[in-house]
Length: 385
Ligand SMILES: Cc1cc2nc3c(=O)[nH]c(=O)nc-3n(C[C@H](O)[C@H](O)[C@H](O)COP(=O)(O)OP(=O)(O)OC[C@H]3O[C@@H](n4cnc5c(N)ncnc54)[C@H](O)[C@@H]3O)c2cc1C
Ligand code: FES
Image 1: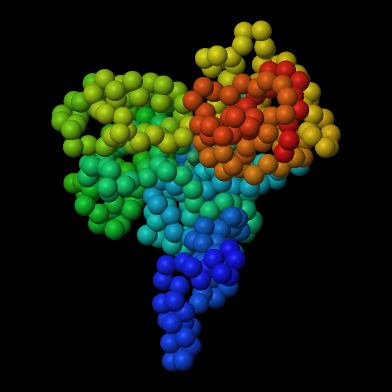
Image 2: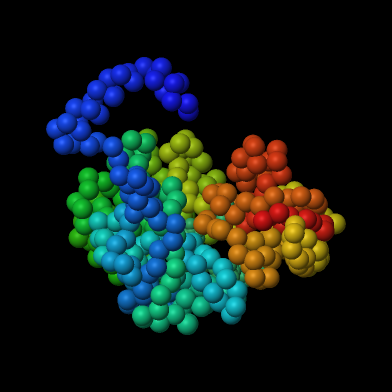
């Protein structure tokens, strides 16, 4: 802005007088250059360096990695948020989000609890090859899957499946450790009893505290199992809870769990605004999604020209992000679920498949930007990174 325009602003003379008085009496209220940016970076750093200080066996397929900051400072987070780990596995630079399972009142470390995924690149790396003392790079805490006292009821009904227990564990631990005035009903679906993560701690807390109610639901129980079996259905929820009008629902688990449990919760007449759902992660079997063109097979291979550089080969059933990473091209990422838009790239030509509900901004759609983590090539493409 030009100096003469600044002088015409409302209150200009008063501000000049204030500055003169401050100078005269030795107080300068002008901000140190970069001070605000420094605070923002402290609260929300782009990258953090974390040291694995402990590895805890949770179940035969699950371990918790306890992560300390290498500079002795971890930013605050809300129970339910995740961090994205940035790793190099077999020469591929990639990333994966993991919810923090420790509670936010505990500021010395973040715990992430990782379950093995069959043929999974990163989960197997974290479980088999990472050892104490290793340094891992991560994002700051991210995500909106957390309790909000303005919106949510005092009673939380949590439906978790498999490793989806991790953000809910952080919420539950916070309620207990901070003595929060909240009631939790946790329905936790697992394939069998060996698969239940945190079972002992959940059983103990449920016995000890009246406001914690833990209901494991086992899909394939052993003969002498006497608890709830099958899936988390509307009937099971209503026979346990009775009345719903004063309760908010929190769901976290694999896509298959959302596909089954969301209609069950809707059967109970719970309004959408009372249902909070964690993002589901990268879609599995994208070729089975509604709208996938029948003439494109998952193994069809297309050429993707990267504007100004090289061309790579990408198969239809694999996201563009994964194809780029496999070819040494690193794109910034956070959620890897299509939600955050960090991985957006410009589609110069060609056609991709993105799931219908991908929240691409209107302006991005107009100018041809796509979320590479959930975009799949349907023909030869040109993209701009
Ligand atoms: C917000 C959020 C929080 C999360 N928190 C946790 C957590 O606390 N704990 C946890 O354990 N996980 C968590 N996850 C999941 C985690 O991010 C990873 O997705 C998970 O660990 C699997 O990663 P991976 O590299 O082992 O598997 P990937 O290599 O990504 O593979 C995943 C699946 O896709 C299949 N696949 C891979 N490539 C292809 C291909 N080309 N074609 C067809 N199929 C293929 C694999 O066989 C496998 O079944 C979270 C996800 C999100 C979005
Ligand atoms: S990484 Fe979040 S939209 Fe792709």
